[in-house]
Image (cartoon, rainbow, N blue to C red):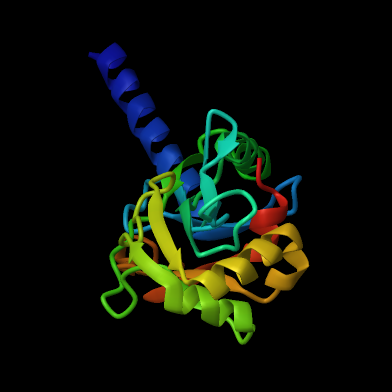
Length: 226
């Protein structure tokens, strides 16, 4: 009987200690990765015993497949010497930490807090009905070219790593202008691709804003094409 009582007391103490440790973990934390990416983490604090953290959307970019950027731009000509008569551009975009960034963030979390702290993935998101897909923000004349040339754009993905497809169809003049700009990405400066989200914060005690957005800079994207 005494043995069973000791085991019961030990179990209660262990469970209690786990709750104390979780209660001491911060509800939010910001990490800076080696590539200077800033990552905001939110603890699932609606569960007092939870040591699970989730990160807010970050790192909006052109996606890659087998090491190649999922981006294409083509111009139409009757032959190689003929003038441009039009063009199309297609890109796949995604957001979220890549594999190396996620591993680094998890390691930083463990080192800064406790070995029990776990980075489980991205926060739970909802669609922003007022901004369901990517939007182009720019005062640049090239931004206006892109905005009037959007042909199709999928809804903003709510899970990290999921892809967002957007295509453009250009007139002859706009295709010529874009072809020149893609050769000199500096011309694309100040053209921002923006995606919006909403979130229910009940799991995270004020850590996640009810609505927010993240941006990607087109000039940087083009410079980093593979």
